[in-house]
Length: 213
Image (cartoon, rainbow, N blue to C red; front, side, top):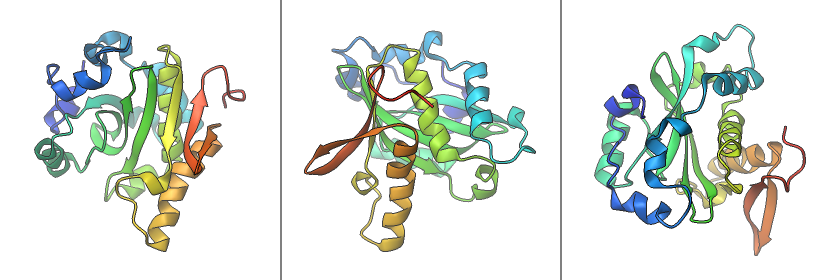
């Protein structure tokens, strides 16, 4: 089930959305599974990840939670979600990091038919820098996705390059920021670059990468 806070913030529970089913209908991970209790991240896993990436010992972990969310990707809904929660999703599925029930950051991804998960967006909510300062939150969200997918028989997790992110701009400061959020976070979490004409994306293959950190 989707956390009520997320639903009230404008996140959709529409299980009949055709866009979602087009992505998942052929694979073993069905669209409706996202709303099953089987896929609910445990509090124990959440706290372990929060603890590992905590910068400051004074951070009260009981104030933080991570919930599943879904977006149809329809511009009107995306805009409504941003208006109500300050989050603008670039993919179908995601996890939201909350403090006292309020969204402060999120990570968004799509799922390919061969049970490969592709992280397309890592975003902190504007105005929440202080709430996020107690964590290495970008890496934390990537690690959370890796830990979660590892429990549910996914084959691979991918992270797009920062320069391939929808909001990337050819401005030095922006390019550096996106490189740090996407490329550096992926590499530090054990993802390997996949080469084409340059680096296409970063990949974590379960059983194929170096020992998970």
